[in-house]
Length: 108
Image (tube, one colour):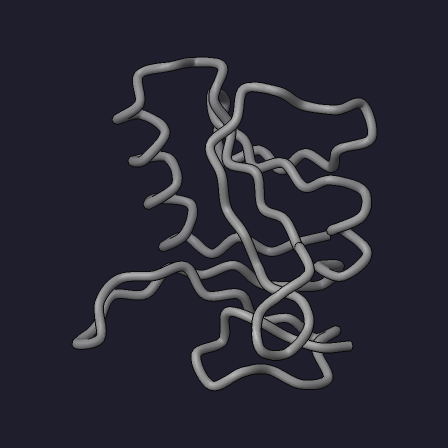
């Protein structure tokens, strides 16, 4: 399971509404790279695989996570912050043993 905070939920729904495409979902994923080995990624997609994990934001909008990424995101918390350094999605991942200074990559 992944927790999506109210701040993140609100921002994701806002982004998806702006796109005005009822088939769009936010895909959250893990890929190789970054200074710590893996990095987080977000993409607006229409496609969804049968093995994807699905997280409903409301009746109309969803976040999807592929099977590979879910093994690294299990128990993670996705938040959205606004501050002096700008706006960003932040993932608090209990599976990460190391993280980079900016928080966009991690190692296990």
